[in-house]
Each structure stands twice: as structure tokens, then as C-alpha cells.
Image 1 (cartoon, rainbow, N blue to C red):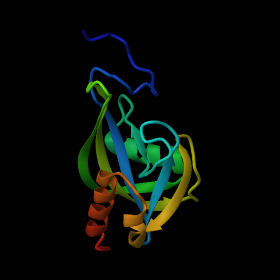
Image 2: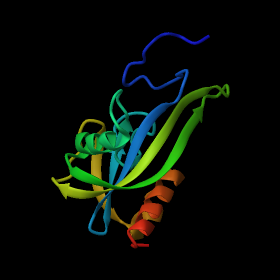
Image 3: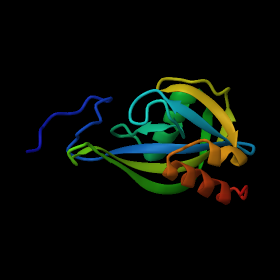
Image 4: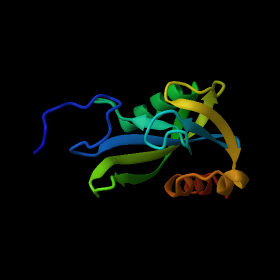
Length: 153
């Protein structure tokens, strides 16, 4: 039976519906930026910056805000990349987590990358390192797709 509760910003488990997240492949010259996630899901793993869309916020505004909050960088969104679903089940087979992720590419405008609100660390990487980073397969695919659009691959 659905509940009328409004989940806390950090409460993303066992929702009655998926939430919208926005991910961003940030480029500076031929390097892309990764953050080490400071919170679940995938806490401690490397990923592209991004986060949950807020009520009344466009997905592009979410992209710019989340990159700034997590890295301190100002970016310009350049390309829509894809929509990816991240669905996780618990040991009983019940859906414990479902995010619909809207992914964009962006260009660095200004700032020095530093770990912010939801990030433990940040680092710039080249495409030659991509296979060794141990990223979620969808994240790696999105980065490669973005590189192809930039004619880097």
C-alpha cells in the first residue's frame, strides 16, 4: 500500500517510485572528471558527478548545480547523452533502489576540482585509463559515448 510520506533527501531506499538523478561527464581538454562517491548507492566507488533533481529544477540546472556542489567547478552543459536506469534488488528480490539517471556532457568553464558535499575525492582522467578504473559498466559506456561526440575516441 503506497504511503503519503515525502522521503528525506538522503532516503532513497524502498521508495514507491523511482527518483530522477542527473549525471554529468565533465571535460577539460581531453580529460574527464570522476568523483569518489561519499554516500550510497555505490559509496566509495568512482563515478561521474551528479545527483538528485529538486522539485521545480530543470535537469540541465540540476547538472550544473550538482557539478558545482560536488566539485566546485562551473560548467556549461553541451550534449544530452542518454537516460539510464539503476535498479537494485535486496536479497528477497524486492526493489530496494531505483533511479532514472539523465546523463549530459559538459565543458569545464572555471574552478579547481575539489571534493564537495557528496564526494570523498575528485580526479581528472584520460580515456586511456578508462578500462582500468573499475566503473559501473553504464558509467563507462556514457563516458565513451561522450568522447565519441567530442571526437576523442
